Length: 475
Image (cartoon, rainbow, N blue to C red):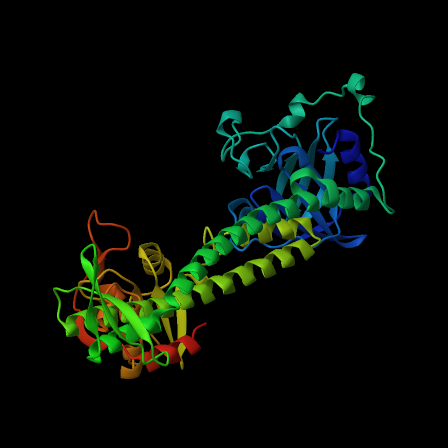
């Protein structure tokens, strides 16, 4: 519910802004402005909101948060009215339009606050009504730079409407400004704590539910990998020479029977291909073992990352629900929306990050992350690595001024690139690397695809001890 004209009149009488100096201006969002003024009543914060059904202008006793990105109209006001003096602050008739006359040096400005729920706006004008700029540019109403705004010409005292509006009886103590500030904080529709907390829960709990569903699937897959060691044992038993072909066959395969010396004796039946030699059948099981083992290591890394993200999301939600300033809560929801560096608003957490001494290594796990890292997280002198002839991760080594990448760090990055690629099961591979500035995007290619130039080649073999150390250095 927006302020009615009688409430605006009472608020202005309590504020007594004439003679106050404007010390600070901040555009907190696209529809919220805050001012620091100093006068006979000391320093005060004035809040102006032109949002839907909560249009208002009053003193606030909660510190409005600053916007991380400077906004156009707020920067204009800083350049024109900060350190200026308010000569007059009046409502025009009962039209819910407040006009502030501001003098700074030899210049005078008219700052209008139109508090209409369906067409709210704030306009900075020259004394003759020429619009310098508007908080909301509305070409259909002529409210753009260079237009004219003279609402005084249409103001009429409508005595018939005067009795239809009353000043609300609000809970709390103190001035009407204090009561109205508290009322909007608790029940002010889209800017109320109740609705903002509900929005925070909706965003973050939805994100947590999606993450936990993915975690459940990964844990089921992890359970399937848990028997990897048995596959290696099958290969050893086949190679032991104690096995003999069973007379029973089924489908395209056959069975062998052998002593299970890993389980203390007794016979075990293992499926084999009778068209393959003993060594070839054993090699099949060894290959399955390596695939499961490598898959398990990568899967556990993904599970750890997902668990960390779930924990962080829950911490963020708790932090939001503890916030008591609705303006600050609104900003936090916008900045930290439930995607989490989603809508990865938190670009600082894109990809996997490993810290080797003073060197930072970043791994993109799919085409989307590869592209995001290239666009927003790396610079021209950073080093890029990728496995040749296999789809997989881009790995970046962040450049340090005046330093050459040491060989151990280069091998760390190479191991990560191979481990997070389709060539991981081979245990070795060829990579190429170059600086980011020598990459160009493939014309009409899929997202993240680049063509390197001035690249160098590097042959690398996966080293389990190195990967384990890297996991311990993961941020």
